[in-house]
Length: 175
Image (cartoon, rainbow, N blue to C red; front, side, top):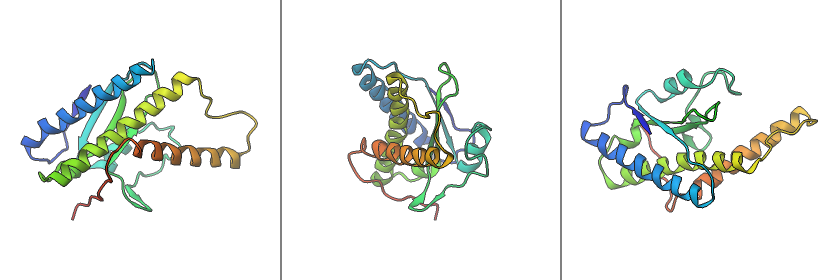
């Protein structure tokens, strides 16, 4: 596991806590995968204050959403994103907006931990999917069928990742 915090503006005393929880949750996720006889994964965590710009900088150019990345969503604002590796030997990359670690109160800490757990669940889901031999895209489908499958798969992945979190997430803003 590696950490990058170049553009982060969190208080310096918060960084060790961020690294501790990322490391502990990564280890726990690896242990769960091993119980299922699935290999673990390496991880690169980037904590940044300019979240959208960081995603645009590292997102593969072949990504299906190659336009400008925006954090605004129908139900709120994106504060973390997992980018799956293109090659088996590459690490998963989790980019985290430092707004989830900016405050030192218990509610912010709980939300930050839940967010990291959610992103690591995405890594585990992809590892399990890959180990199972699941075929994501079948030949012979129409463009509409492929789009519908991708929408449903994305929604199910978000639901599955949310089910790893034992408490509701609290919306975060930069107010």
